[in-house]
Every structure is written in C-alpha cells, then in structure tokens.
Amino acid sequence: MSNKVLKGASFTLRHLLLAVLSLIWLIPIIWLVLNSFSEFQGMNARRFVPEEFSLTAYRLLLFDRYDTVAQFPVWFMNTLQIAIFSGLIASIFVLCVSYAMSRMRFKGRRTLMSLSVIIGLFPGILAMIAVYFVMQAFGLTNSHIGLILVYSGSSGLGFLIAKGFFDTISETLSESARLDGATESQIFRMIIMPLSKPIIVYTVIGAFLVPWMDFMFANIMITSGIATDWTVAIGLFRMIDRALINTHFARFAAGGVLISIPISVLFVIMQKFYVEGITSGATKG
Image (tube, rainbow, N blue to C red):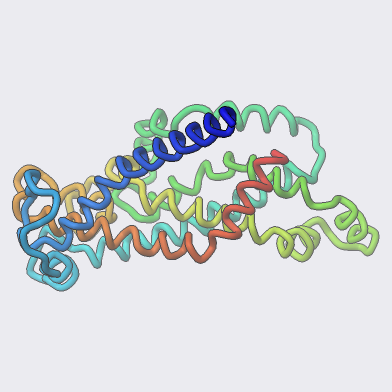
C-alpha cells in the first residue's frame, strides 16, 4: 500500500511541476494576445488584463495606409514569398542529399557525413559577417533573392533525420526497380518519394519555419532602411523602438498573433506526418 501511495504522490508531483512550468511558459504568450486586443495602444506593464478591449490594433495594423511605420501586409507578403521559395529549395536539397547518403555508396561518403555533422555543430551566427560580405560582393544585400540564397545555401547539411527515414525503406524495392531498368532518378521520384510523405512534410515545415521566424540574418542582410523591404521580424522589431513603443505596442502584439496563425494551422493539419517524420528518422538515424 505504501508503494502505491508513493507512486501516486510522485505521479501527482511530476504532473503538478509540468503544469506550473507550462503556465510559466504560457504567461508571456497570453499577455501578448491580451495586449493585442487592448484599446490602449501603448505598453502597460502594470496590468496583465487590459482595461478596455477592442480590435483597434488589428484594424490599424492591417488597414491604416497612412502609417509609414507599420506596413504589416507588405512585410507579411515579403516573408511569405521568402519562406515559400526558401522552403522549396531547401527541401529539395535536404531530400536529395539524404537519399544520396542513405542509398548510394561512393568514395569519401563517410568522411562527408562526418564533416557535415561537425560543421552542423557550429551555430550559423558565426558565419554571418562572412556571408554578408560575400553577398555584398555579388550585390545581393538588401535583396529578397539574397535572403533566399542564404536560407537555402547550407540546408543540405541537415540531412541526418531524412537519411534515417530513407534507411527504414526496404532496399529490395530499389533493387527490383533496378532489375526492371529504372534509373536512380526514377527510383527516387517514383518509389522512394511516394513512401516518404511523413519526412517530406517534416522537411518542408522545418525549411519553411527558418525564414518565417528568423530575425538575425534578415536584419543583417536588409539594411536599406526602406520599410517595404523588411520582413515581418524586422518590421515588428522596429515597432517597439523606444520612440514608437508607446504608440505601436498593441499593433506589435497584434502582428505577433497574426504571424503565428499560418504556421500554427499548418502544423495542426500536418501534425500526424510531422511527428512520424521525426520519430522514424531520428530512431534509425
């Protein structure tokens, strides 16, 4: 009986701790959402719940054409275009590299894999300055094309999870196709890819999230000072500048809520495949 009591108490304490940690994690998010519906457009750090609620911040953010500071619709479209193109290019790179590392045997394969893992251990922020000067030499700073190239360039290094998933697909399928005269490209497109929906979804969402949420690279690359060139991350950051925070904080909060909606909906719809891609690839990889 005492063992059951101890197990029950341990179970309760663990879940109570998880509940407290979850609440601490959710408090800033709840506060941001509540402030986005505040009638007061500045930041009121003394109140958790606003005195008056309204949709003023959303209306001003989306439909005020005379506000030269908050141009959220333009920022949103800039970010969406960059994320879509970067996501597609990066996903193709990752899937192709993963398939090559999983199914092909060539000289130097293990060395390349080891080097890729070692390089991946270093944070990308260390290469920011070098990347900036390279892009500047080619005239690609202050350019959305430059951002797409930066986000897509080293994406192939993130091949490990996708490689692990491809390792779980039976090699006999590929061998049978080769006996029938199929090329490696045909095997990849017609046999492997239809069986790899979970890892494709995982790869696409992961590649889409990088430019969607990034601030550091975008802020370094886009230095023109022209608001219509900015991504959402840069635009929202500029809205909480010391000179603007007292008039634009509610709009900043509204922008934070709006930018989270598309990726949240996408994740909820694709959650099943996303989780399958992580678990299958990580287990084998």
